[in-house]
Image (cartoon, rainbow, N blue to C red; front, side, top):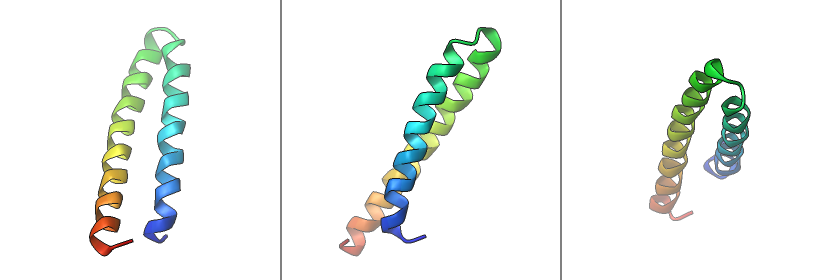
Length: 61
């Protein structure tokens, strides 16, 4: 994938984690662990998206 293709890809992944977190929060005790895992994944995805933005900026795209 190109850097340009990765931008909307990671945006989609991020918003998928938002939806999953809402669902997991409603599922009781087991849902809390899944919610926390989705939260960690959301943080990782945000970090990747920021790295892509920075790389694009350095390449002048």
